[in-house]
Length: 86
Image 1 (cartoon, rainbow, N blue to C red):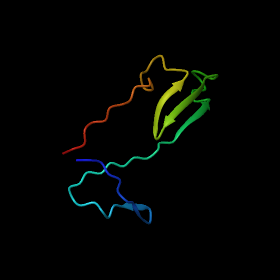
Image 2 (image 1 turned 135 degrees about the vertical axis):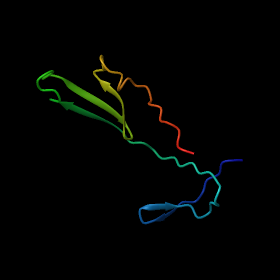
Image 3 (image 1 turned 90 degrees about the vertical axis):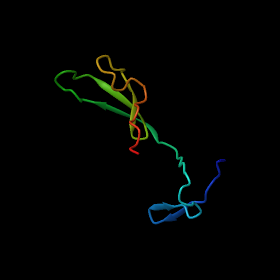
Image 4 (image 1 turned 120 degrees about the vertical axis):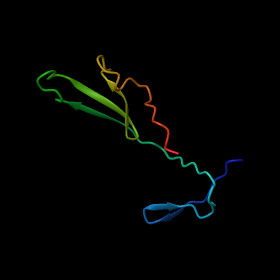
């Protein structure tokens, strides 16, 4: 099967695909917003001078500056999501 563009119809805040028949598979692509968020004063007692920059892609933090030393939480590796239920 070949990929083809499908016309999009907006219905209020929703999207409709009128030319698609049941059983067809759709792939929707859209740009993700990329931004940085600088914060300080998160841990006033433990690290009063710590300033951090969080790098976001969409709704996920992909890295931090300074890089973590005690947790792999934002190690720049994508998190794998479990497969959707069948």
